[in-house]
Image (cartoon, rainbow, N blue to C red):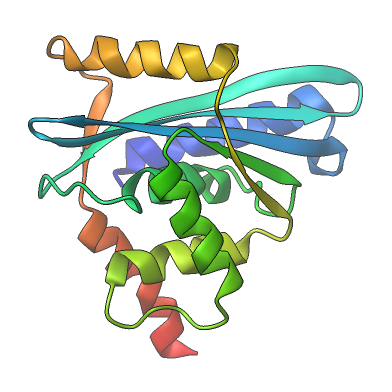
Length: 185
């Protein structure tokens, strides 16, 4: 990530805490995760909503990306979405993750049930680390609702033409970065 990206996350963290009166007042994170198969690869997207005491809720962030290597794997969208939970320092808050993709949901459930990370699949090992790092995580299917419809509509719109909203992510590099602390401990 660039310094500008990191500065943006610091600003968002500060604004979220300020709006709710501090980190201790945050009670829930709702994360809606989806993807869409496209010619250049898997278009991943998510919406992250934060709720807390004294406030109804806040649409905190959203993000869209494709893998630099054009991979189409069920681990990509959850990795990208859960990264934001960590970057916004929300891993200690009750998190409900809703998945549009059954493949991604089943993969996350399987990895959450596993004690040890898979050795042969670096992306699954990275997702395993992310899933296990969130203290209270609920994994649910997202079969209907306005957020689901909004995410599907947005993914469809992003496919239709060039946009600067879709970032290219080096998921292999992300997996390597998440593996590094494991080697040191």
